[in-house]
Image (cartoon, rainbow, N blue to C red; front, side, top):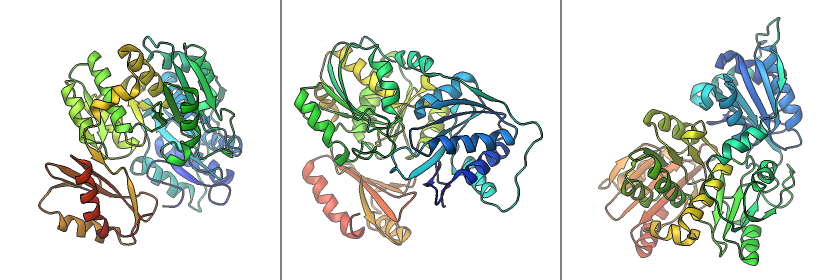
Length: 443
């Protein structure tokens, strides 16, 4: 697949992705997406300004008008696309990837994401071809716009009666540190921010908050300062992870369930979409709150498409993505943070007390296995557990009354990813010991 992935364009700079290719990607995007205007935002990586400039040059040479919003989190770019009525948009970012990576996240009108099937593969074929790409005689216009103030006002619409509390944030030198000060200035928090300086070399730790090694500094600060909550953002701030006062991470599927309970009070009967790795307690909590639980494939393009189809008010993934209907059906770590603070304030309870009723089952979390012939292993597992209820929504999911598992391929590596859950901790350990020998060595 090269740099043209299932959900975005991403590669090592400049070996795999450079300014020359960026310009061609811009030209190809105009042709494939047939959009006459694009919003372009960029993250804090050292190569992002030149890569954004090259992309913009390609877009304009192809005839598209460009609204350059400059330094921006991915959620802010989504907001600009939706609020300014652009026909497309691009965020220049590599999200949580290491410093040597750069990439592009493409979006169509109304913030509908462009995936491999809906444009990225076609853009890649054109951009990497040897033939000259079509350029127009009258170039597209270039407008520079600052949407940061408008975005802050938009995000704060999700804040409801936030009370004073002590919170520690870790922005991992990523884009969370760009807008967080403006939000905090409007909130009654005793806030501390770790690694707020924008630095695309990530000198302190990787900007992937799901990994425990990247939670260490925040966990220590939360305990040391006696904080009510810890919040960790990824590199482009479209994801966040919450930490309890003891420094332990709160499972994102439990957060989805908590958010659903809150949102469904204001939208009775609405649909809530969750990814198929999520606990059964997420499904249970949505139904108990009067909502319509919808299980979906992993990946933002799938979740967003299902939300639009079903008119869902909310979506959530185990990776820390939270999607909001009233945020152009898009994800935002900043809005998720405001929602959590609002729920804690409205219910006057700590996060541990709020989550405890949702922690009903025992899960392994996602475990990766190195597998060369992934299809053969999945077929073997399907045969071994043929007495269970099976579906192939994403990989294979096998369900029994008291336990279930999902086994799916990685989109980018020769790995199989396993998520397993059982009614009890003992059953979870036993079932994992049973299935693990079929899957090979852990990664």
